[in-house]
Length: 131
Image (tube, helix red, strand yellow):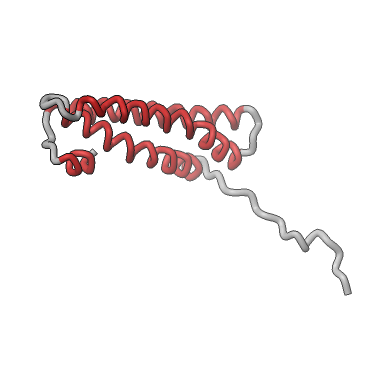
């Protein structure tokens, strides 16, 4: 959000504050959708670690497309004197935070539920020793 305002050279105005509030709602929705997908995968019997990976991968496209359409939808507001700060706030914040959501939410989910990657078996441990 701050980078969007700095990049465009726009001030933090009341409309930027409104953009920040709407941005927080969009990001919460993205996180809830991602966590819900992981929970659904786990409920279907998928191993926990794989559920985190599969849930994150399956939500990648919807989160990126929703963020992209919103970002591109804000472009016509940039020349407007009243809504330019709001548009820059939403565009910058959503671009950065969507990537952060797709990385941080699965990591924090795995940490919170103590989900660890499965141990890899050594390929030579199961075969008889050759002399």
